[in-house]
Image 1 (tube, one colour):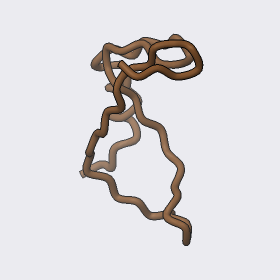
Image 2 (cartoon, one colour):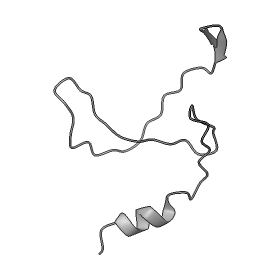
Image 3 (cartoon, one colour):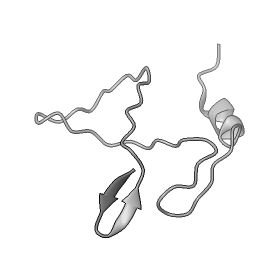
Amino acid sequence: MLQRFGELAPEREVKFAPVNLQAVEADGTFSGYASVFGQVDLGQDLVMPGAFRESLARAAPVG
């Protein structure tokens, strides 16, 4: 554990995912949303596997 501002913080994790970035700024920054299943995030949200299943199916291209 790392100590930060008097509290313990988890070790940094690096995740990789296949992503097609179509809007990368000149400085390399981009916007997006990521979620780790089964982990409480900084906003105290807990996202479980399958949470996006229906919305992703609606947004998927037909064919």
